[in-house]
Length: 525
Image (cartoon, rainbow, N blue to C red; front, side, top):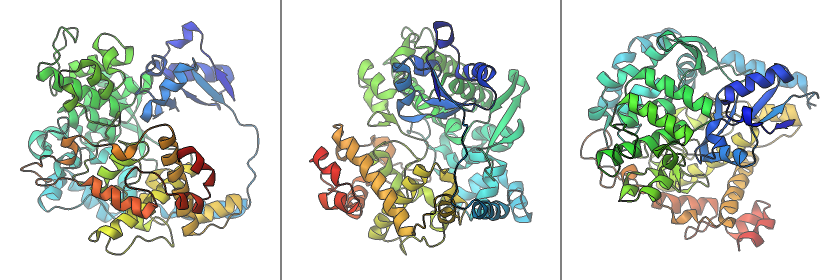
């Protein structure tokens, strides 16, 4: 591994150009992890980039590299990995991959023909966003996460107009259809996916209208953050914004939420054209949105105030702007509504890295469903109707989710059914882990994360979510009408299952001992 501390002339390069330059110098088989302009300028919503624009985007980790004047890490392996049983690993992986049929059968083809009318159908009959693993696998392969662009707005999953709107009325299918996965896929040149993945849920686009020969397909979160959230149905602008953010190494979720904050401040007279360098910030005004994002990346004008996210910006702007900042402990909230996926309210508020949809949520992870993730694992019966069973289920999926993360395994694997995770671990390491040991390992990680946050002085138990996010007051119409999320009650129930004190979120001493974390006790008590 080599650390590249950039010279002045290299420092301002976008991260994709920097990677291409280093491949010429070190060889095409290197792997890199680096920052773009946002990380260089210490933006608290910047990320670390690899593979020409794929980003570990959340929590401002790009600024950490930027603070060390570290442009990029370059890695090239030269050692063989020692496996406990290589033949068994090849067999297990081959069997799993052969069962992941990604090409649509007759049923799926019929579903695809119905695609234009599906959003209204799902909303009208209150059909949940979930399906059998086989169907989920095919949807992800054909469309990727952008399959949810139109549907999620219509059924109440994706936030609209900075969480103040209702998709059915404010961003209905006749508007959102411009962001449909069918239109996006018409630009797709080839599939893209992680190394050896049988699903390949990503894509590479060619967009002649923009003079772009190669760019990544924008994911759901990006399409929603720059689309639904801003009432922007200009697909070309979203492709431009996706490319800008990829090259600058900045989080599209946080950037979109911060733009929404700025628009609402502008519409309420808190900021004016005098502050925005003449930009008219309006809902759906795509040209102004693109220009504002460029200002954020470069920290120019009001972009300097916005470059650290909506919480910091609201603190600097003041004038009551805080009520327009949709964040949890400073991290902008992701593009799924807890009024639709109830347990996301708990996750957004109380996970050690709050505001993220990719942390454990039993409702969100049931899209696949999570209960069929691996053999021997099952959720409590009637968890959808019984609160205590749901709290226990949330504890269990937290363990599963953290275990998946520590393996470096994609969270989408939980959606595709019967993943041979135990068999793969046995083939690689020789360890024969039970389901209970897997969950306990994940809970140990989650409890350690919680303890670290407490040690650093953050009392997550005191956190709260913006009123709009939880439905206070509730919508009077639409798919989520009348719903207010009691995420505090959910938190207290999960704490009991986790062995944490609900009053302050501290893991109990006996919990730490049971998880072999005795050494943590002195750090937090």
